[in-house]
Length: 405
Image (cartoon, rainbow, N blue to C red; front, side, top):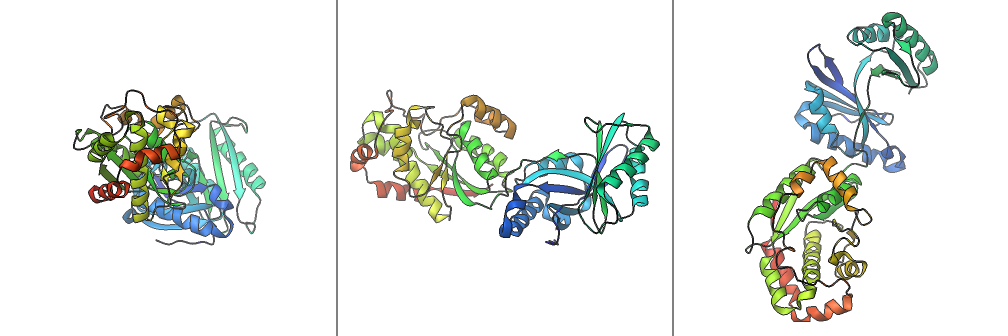
């Protein structure tokens, strides 16, 4: 794979026929990365790596940067929908476009563009040219007018600069001219891995997958973690969370998941502590084990799907009592969202239908009748004096199982 930092645009050639559309190159545009100053090349390199990982490294012939964009050339054509499905799961991409390119001559641009226009049927159009190389012999406005006149004479379409049926985008480089007809939106954000590794707790519900998605969009590489109540419940929650992790791992170009059987630890808590505090004590123990696993796997923090006030354990005071036992930061990207907002995003990323499948999770199992809604770290510390915290954490680490997704 060739990475050229003299520029910053991603090209992918295109082979289009009457019955199918095969892509050989595509322009991929990024946004926030361009503002990263001295670190910009690191982000560009990471984005290229993630794109190649998602698209399949054996399929990529060349990848190089051009001014605020990236070029990837395929060894073999790829179907448009397959390309779209893969690139739309790569964070850092603002939009991308199947493209064509010719040598830097206006007559060749007209000839090649004309052959594609003959296969298209529209009533109105606009031309948007941009001179990305100052040494290009003509300006963008001249190209707009020249190509606009050419298209109008060849097709009879009307010029509509406000609401055209089709827009012809033209990029003028010193080495070549690129043109394309659409901008397909990407997920935005910054490349996964830019912010380091984080442990993402997946409960199997609606909220936690959305929380994981949101931190991935800000560059965090997730290590998924699920606590289940084996040996007192079935394998359903594990199977469900595995399916959720598979969907999410498409956005992180692969990943890992850890399963921790939590039933015996729960039983120890039930036997030695008052019932109203049970869920809080479960969660504090999970946080401790998650911290230990994070350090073992060189992760820098935890992320959960907690929403302020949604359930008894998620009041402000109870969240503070959880934070008190964590040495690492706990990120809660959904903290101020309401349920409908979370559901809408879960549908968008494809996790909602799996999340609503019924299962027994480790906190719905053995729930107290009247859970405590307000607590303090000092109060819970006193209650936990009857537990061998260190031993329970070690137990959780010893029985944890990690898998590649």
